[in-house]
Image 1 (cartoon, one colour):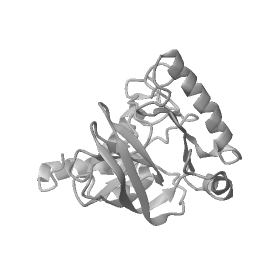
Image 2 (image 1 turned 90 degrees about the vertical axis):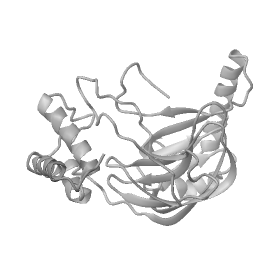
Image 3 (image 1 turned 135 degrees about the vertical axis):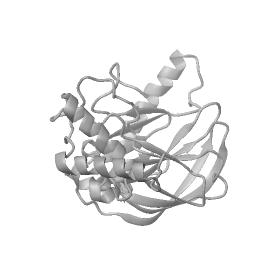
Length: 273
C-alpha cells in the first residue's frame, strides 16, 4: 500500500531509502551468503523500500551493484494459447527482464480483466525462514492483467510468464511486450534445431527454458549454450515422462506440463515445482 500524500508515510520511505543508500544491501549469492541479522534486515529493507519508492531507479545501484546491460528487443509479439482445468498454468514467453527493468505489455481483450496475470521470475519459493540466505527470500512478482496496457517491473528481474487462471480457454491471442531481453527458449514442435543452433541458444538472457511434451525445464543459460541437439534431449524426456504416466496409469500426455526450476536455495527438501 502506497500513501505518498501522507507526510508520515513519505518521511518513513525517505528515511529507509537514506539507510539503504548509506549502508547498502548485501550482494547475496551462493558464494556470498547472508547470515547476520543486520544483513538479513538490510536485504529485507532494500527489497521492500524499492517497491514503494517514488524513485526506485535511484535505489537500484545500492541494492544490486552488478547489473550487466543486456541487449533488448522491442515490441516482441507472443502468441498465447491455453486450455486450463482446475489449476492455473504458467505460459512461457521466451522473454526476460533485467533487474529493475520496466516494460509495458499490451493485453488483448480476450484475457484482459479476466484474472490473468503476468509473473516475473521463475523461482517462487519463499526462503525467508532459512538461517542462511543464498538469495533474497522472495525474487518474483505478479501483476494482474487488468488493463489494455500494463507496466511491470521486478527488482530481481526474471523470465516473463503469462499466468492463465483455472478454467481458461484461449487460442493464439497475442500480447506485445514493449521492451525485453530475448531468452534461449526451445519448444518441441515449434523451434527448429537449425534456428536453435544458429541464434536462439545464444540469446543474452541468463535464464533458459527447454519445453518438451510433458515437462518444462528452467535453468541457467550457460548450460544450454553448447547444446547442439535439443530434439534428442526432448526425445529422452518424452520417454521418461511417458514412462512415469504409464507407471501412474495416467494418459501419456499430461493435461498440464510439469516444471523443473533450478534454484540456488529452496525452503525445504531438494526440489520443488
